[in-house]
Length: 284
Image (tube, rainbow, N blue to C red):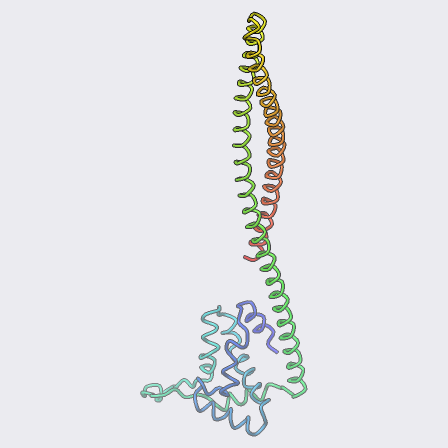
């Protein structure tokens, strides 16, 4: 009925519950002058509650120009406590010089303006259906937004847990990688030592062979026994050398595998972190 007022209120972000709820709960008695309130009550008792809507629309129509010229804070305050001032009686002549302790209001004009508004029960029922439809649409919209937000929160928590688990796995892989690297270095050192011992034993065997060839028969048996012992020890060292070489090759393979797993985990963590950041931005 007042499209310009309706559009302006929507533009300012003001809905009817912010100012009109007190009108209906108290039948305007919360702020309005009693002279106007009594006339409103008389009309409602005579014609029914639909008369209340006439007074509401009459007030908005009477103040349309003022409403269209205000913005949010001033407008909301005016809707709550300033509408009835448009019916104030301004004293003139001799009365203007007298001290008036209380403002007076033209209740007859207020009732006349209300009666000029045509509102039928059919129209009220139509407005009621429209209101319920709008409320239901808003409820569904809020429910959908709430559901979507909850799904985002769940996804965000899931990703957060995944990232924590991945970071824990990365720490484990890092620790294992360091341990394996240390083992690899230790094996290399041990292998070098074994090779040195092996070379020394070979040199000793060669020296003994040379001594055996030049020694008399009495010493030959002793030298042979010592040479056999050294040969057995040499075989043991060769076996140990082979074992260490195999172990070194295995640790090198494991080290390569851990490096590949570490790189894959880093890539996965980065992908999850980007997805998590996207979800945080969506939540904000």
